[in-house]
Amino acid sequence: MHFRKLLFLWILVFSFQGSTVFAHEVLLILDPGHGGSDHGGWSGDGFKFGNGYVAEDAYTFDVAKRVEAKAKEKGWVVAFTVRDKLVSDHVADSDEYNILPPRRNLIFNLPLPYEIVHRGRDGLGKRLSVTRRLNREYRGAIQIFVSLHIDLTEPYVQGMHIFTGGIKNSNEFAESIIREAREQGLGFRVRSEEKPMINEKAHLYVLRRGVITPRVLIELGNFYNPRDQLLILRSEGREKYAEVIANAIEDYVK
Ligand SMILES: [Zn+2]
Image (cartoon, rainbow, N blue to C red; front, side):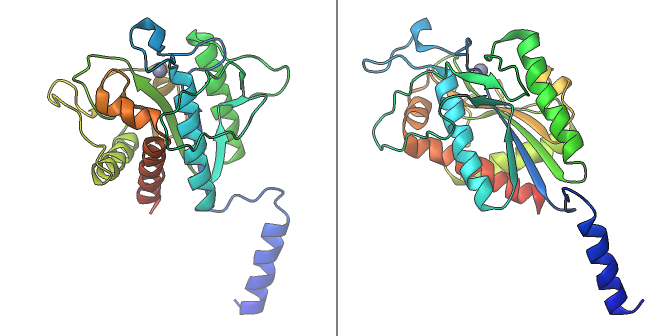
């Protein structure tokens, strides 16, 4: 076919599609664990840092916002399963240890009426409704789902723990995360034979019922482990986690 005709057809096709999803467009869905009425791991349960109490939801959300910033620089579309109805883009960037306030104002990222995030099957179901809507909306794009959490377990356990539900592409993506984590000096889980970095067996609800592939749930670290605590509580450390995730996505979509 004549080149000009081809070009004309190309313009015709693309100008008639309302929201064009390009073949290699990347949609990243971030699912910061907890928030609203559920703070997740809570230092009041056992450990205390300085004078402050530390809540998991504050840190998973902060890391997610940092991943978002990096993803946008790379030109990917980013969506959250939950959002803060008051402050949407606050990220603490002090070099000091950060005791971040719990994310009491998180709502599900669904159309009105607003609903404060809560735990349990119903809460997880609402996060999954967001992903189903996006899955349809961005059909044709490379879609990736990342849920972020922080462990509260025996102090010797250190490093990332990635759940994949045994899904092949999710395992591959998890391998990229581990490679990047090792490069950043984060990829180490003590007693790896008991606590491997990739967990294929646990059938977590958001993975079992998810529609996006690859999909992973990452326990970034363990609040009770001194090294992980340092990484999680300092903005520098959280920036590293975000870097690892963004680079792993880049590797995976190549
Ligand atoms: Zn959690």
